[in-house]
Image (cartoon, rainbow, N blue to C red; front, side, top):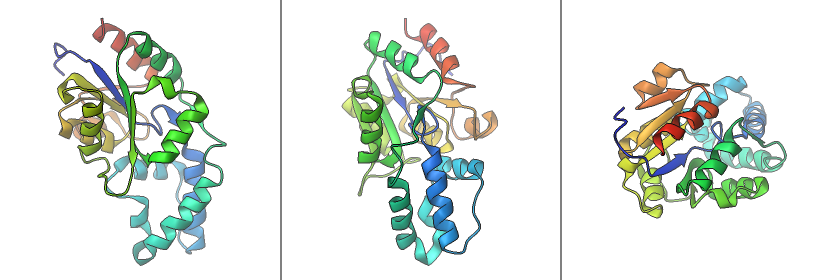
Amino acid sequence: MNQQQGIRGVLFDMDGTLVDAFPPIINALNRTLAEYGMATMTPEAIKRHTGRGDCGMKSLFGEHKEKAATRFLELHDADYLKQIKTIEGAEPLLSWLRSKGVPVAIVTSKGQYRAEAQIELLGWQDYFRTIVGKMDGRAEKPSPEPVLMACETLALNPAESIMIGDGIADMKAGSRAGALTAGIVDSFSRKELEESGASICFNSLIDVHEWLKKMLV
């Protein structure tokens, strides 16, 4: 990583990076799989599946993908605002970035209004200049399009931004857009993240925070 490049903006993935919103995803997907007579998946397998980005939930259900996706969302939306938890270190990092005047965005594969609802529930609206979520007609990660959209809103050249996430799709999207990329090692190994385009890897948001303190002076 070229540490002489200036970082002027920060883009975050949401699920698994800033918040742990997986319990309702895991519950909804496994209930949907069971209803269709399919084998359920472990929590770790579901996290890895969603983190790849290039194989959405719909791909699991073949010819039934449309109805299954609708059922998944019905089950997910029944409790997705009840179980959300913040990842350790997220709020101190976001608060610090705001104090430094650094523009920050979320780039997520979660539906736009669901992402906005979760951020509102947490009282985090003031931390982000924009939220780029899933919408009809909008490409999803690992496409660079959502990263480029966020950078445009923040008035940043992608090379002046860093995309931080825990998934392969995050690293691919950020690197394809020309942004620096920071992977958080969790469901995917350091090697997997690096092979997907990660410029640098960390074990936690706390480590990311300490590193950014040196980069944003």
